[in-house]
Image (cartoon, rainbow, N blue to C red; front, top):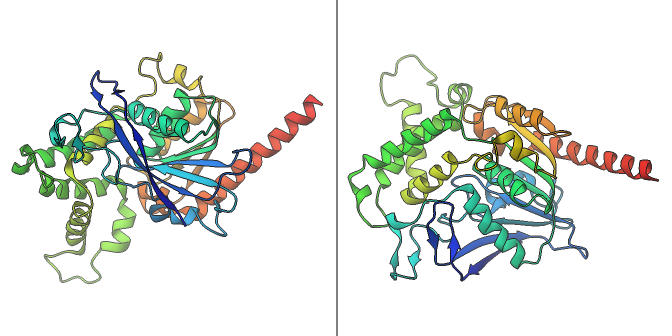
Length: 352
């Protein structure tokens, strides 16, 4: 069974903004066992509202008889810094004030977040990672990490993500933060601050996570007489309230800002120059109906990274297709591994 653990870092942690955390903890989940030469590590980076329990939100990929069988792999995923599933975040107690951070929690970037992940990796004594896999915000973090520590990762699989967050994506996120700001409680320091706004923000976000065809198939009315109380309307309310029961507005705000700031080319001479640092064999995966991270973003990455592979998933679920279409994703990853294996054998024969 997956094991839930906590890593404690008790030194000053410098952030890109110039601010710092006096220390932090990361909640993380492991599944499977390290093999003798520690060559079977799979590291997962989760999406914006995910937790470290990848078997919960990406269940189709993990388990006996599935792509990543714990008998063969050692899988690890850490809840992001700034999160609300066990890692240090805005609701955590600031050791310097002995009060929760709330609004005083410093802004984070994906570069900060993967810096924290890398400290955990080092603490676990993991010198190399066979595969780094992430989708959406987690895909941004995976790419950033593979550039920051290129010698660590053998394979990179980035799903439904990008190299630099788009103006379109930033506009979606700001619209959600506007909803949080409109909540009068947002200015208070309490765990419930901005919850009503978060409910609306999540409803807005659903329009970027899903697709027209998905709503038509599941939420359109069957008859011709209704004039109010539509399925689609109640679905939006349901999704907003569902998230508000398990998340908080501070973390939502913080991580959406981290997503907006994502730009692998920052202080590296631009995206193309930054991608030259990659050493991992790379698979980029898109979803044909993704409105938030359109396939053009993954296709561009594929063009810029020599010898990389690109796969397009077909789905009626929009961006969320990266979580739903695990059969297609499994096949794409299997083919990626097989191709890289064939290349490796070819290179070895050539050297002989």
